[in-house]
Image (tube, rainbow, N blue to C red; front, side, top):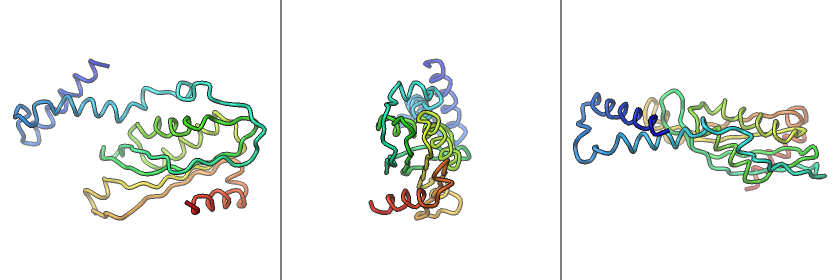
Length: 188
């Protein structure tokens, strides 16, 4: 990992120079190393896998009612401009004999968010991962986020929110189940 940090720092030093700045001036002297470490942190999801994240926290349960987790903060980088998008993930699943440890839902969101992403793919990756580890009858994921690539550049729209959803299994097949989840989201 250290070698990667050094290489990234050299690249950031070059970028700073190409922008017309002096990477040796006092305020920027340590910036390439800090930026490299920050980028490694922001993309640490590439070095994580579902089995390690879940770490056996799947528990047998006779509960067959909806399990929903709302307002999981997420921070990601858009793969088109490497600018942040930030928001919330809401997810639900219908257990089929097994439930997932609560903190693992947030860890799964983080694992996929900490990669270069588009929100549409992120939403699907989270839903499919929850489905895979729980064997649930259905999974629903909704993400709402603000994209800096749209706010800081381009059209510069400050108040726009992107919402994406993925519905699997019963959430896709049953309007009543889908509506129950969406109604739960509105109650907060």
